[in-house]
Image (cartoon, rainbow, N blue to C red; front, side, top):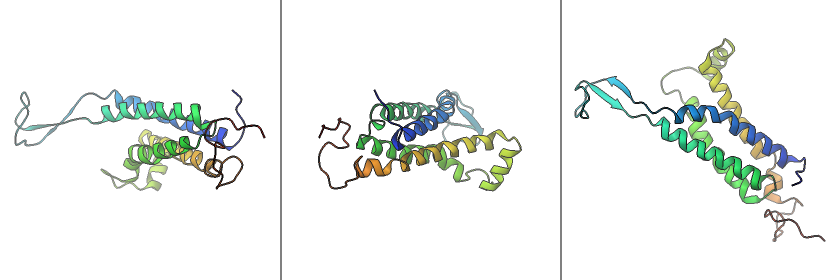
Amino acid sequence: MKIRLDAVAVSSVLLTVAFLMLTPRMIVWALMTHQSRFRDRAFYPAPGIAWDQVVIPNYFAPLGTASLAIIAIGLVVTWAGYVKGARWTWFVVFVIVWVWAFPVCLFPWLYPWDSGNSVSETLRAALHGDWNARDFLKVVLAFLLMVLALVLPAKTFLLGRRGSLGRIGRANSGAPDEPT
């Protein structure tokens, strides 16, 4: 298989790097199978739990497992069809970036659920060695790589390799072009 060095190939490499950057975090999430207990008054405690404790289920494990599946799908789509320039693969990657990566990976960092830290405070903490802030920077970098990988070949995918929007046929369907 001959890979051309164009915007689509560069975009495929950027997507691969971004997916692989997020993989260790999702593995950690998938391995979280324990539950947390917070001392609080429960109206109906589960059997075996003290009356003054509530069990909060951990939703990171299923989210991590589903995220690993989405990363695998993203890598397969990237290297099976995206490199070849199949139009449908750009839309699949678009959905992965904006329906999975943004809400699952980036949104929890942008909305301060439990702290009032601003982005500038987080960047300052990352420079001083705070590991939580460095995780934030890794997630932001991976998301920016994904967005860049979507924007770089947008003209190729939306207009086709020849640049004609109205052309109907197999010009960018993933099938090889017919010789003219």
